[in-house]
Image (cartoon, rainbow, N blue to C red; front, top):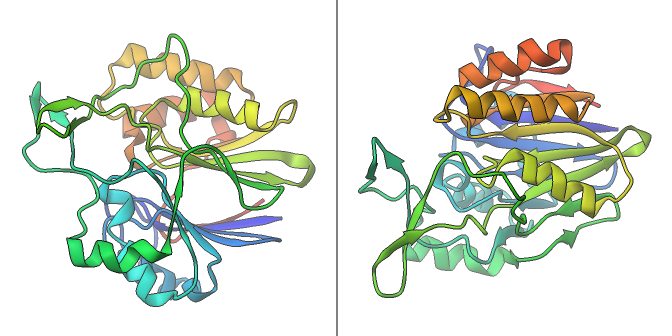
Length: 277
């Protein structure tokens, strides 16, 4: 059995919860309680209080990648919860810049903690690279390998040691995979900057021969053209998953396309909503 509650999401359907451009999910399994991402502010904590989610009982915080809309709530989490380790990829720190209209942003969308905050949190961080098994049922992927023929839908940039802007290979992105009994494997992916299909393909190598049952993911199709969206939707549909939750940066057009393709198997999540598997 697994239960998970959205504490931060782009939309909400509840009067007692608030939405933001961010993602945070509290996951409860028979073995562990996990916070996956911490949103763009401390809003996730306020929504947790409204939904009676006890963040002090979280055994770990897993961060999907080094962008502010998944990490700005980490300082608040560390104040609330004094013991849970924070699993963050070793390449997650550093300024990161998106691109709009062919021009690189002037403001970083990376982890925005000041140096004092960073130093306070560092003792809690467990840096990842390759896969880490928290239990036999729960795996943090580490770096997601590229899949031939799949290109990211958006390019990000970083400054190298010489101060020059270079492409961010998004090696710091990782997903959380949880085996839920005989039902199969459920993937939680923050933004899928490397592509949601590479995430699905890598999950198959981490759990060889097992069924991938569910995908709860930001898919970063917001800025993709319709052809690319359709290709991704078709690939997801071909996986024959039991359930798909397109969240956060997926974009309303891609969400509608997934709903049209998958019907009831496509579930529209919102901040404050709780689900049981």
